[in-house]
Image (cartoon, rainbow, N blue to C red; front, top):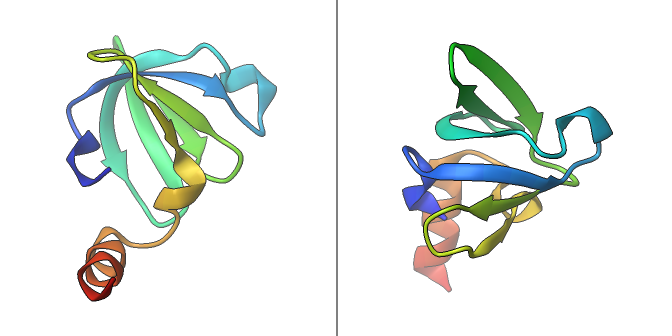
Length: 80
């Protein structure tokens, strides 16, 4: 999940129904949100309650698993 930046993604499910179907480039990640570039617009999507589909390969990513800072997720993975 750490290699998501730059990937083409689509929002398959979201706690905000108006964001379902948004497609674009995974551009930025904060502790609780994801920013997707859709042409000349930026869409900020909450991580909680969101399922993303990576366009290249079709894998599904549950964004709830991405909540928190990226460096904290890396440290948690290193301990497991």
